[in-house]
Amino acid sequence: MTRHGKNCTAGAVYTYHEKKKDTASSGYGTQSVRLGKDAIKDFDCCCLSLQPCQDPVVTPDGYLYEKQAILEFLLHRKTEIAKKMKAYEKQKQAQKSSRQLESTSEQRQQVERFKTSENTIVSKPINPFTSGQKDGETSKSQSGSEPATSSSQSLPSFWIPSLTPEAKPTLLKKPSKAVLCPMSGRPIRMNELIAVRFTPLDPSLDRVALLNRQERYVCAVTRDVLGNSVPCAVLRPSGSVVTQECMEKLIRKDMVDPVTGDKLTDRDIIPLQRGGTGFSGSGVDLRAKEARPVMQA
Image: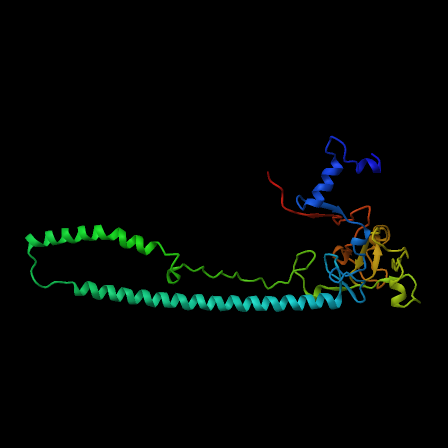
């Protein structure tokens, strides 16, 4: 279909292009857009600030953060958890005091019922011919008047402000003291963060000149250029960043850190979570969806 064919409105058929165009302009229906390369952060950018890291640290799951940004996040989350815990303790104390008041009021009611039952004890002899009639009359009167009182007590009056039912306060759940990673959702601690040391492509360049370049860092062993399309890994003892190809072909044979000479384990090799390119997802969903209301007939 040519460009002029898409804008043709004289056809008798409601084309797919016209339907898609009308759906986008109507405000109804779920919209789906494929993200480009500019919408995905680079592999050396912080997951919180989305800026190139100056003092990068990595979590055991492989997510890269700026040290200052992640520490501020941890402090903020701990402050929020402390506030929630304080509110929960306050609610707990209020519930405890209310239970004590209910128990004391119930004890008072029991005492009052006991007093009334003791006061109704009759010491005079009861006439068996008249006591039955009185009991029957009282039972009839009680049975006749009972539904009215029960119905009036059970049904509140919504039009009278004093009798309007009130909503009960929401009960707070006990908050978890663990701070979760904003990317993986797993518990994260400050002592688990690992300092990352990128190897610059040209050590003579300063930070500003290095950030202006598209190719900034290389592998610490093979000197291959790093990027979003190159799988990387961080070595825990030295914090060096190497390519996965170097890891599989060279380092895994001896399991020795080439920078510090320390022995490595599988736990010391952290795959670095990278962004994506415009062509492949690289573990990142490149399609954004916006759920909008559906037009119903």
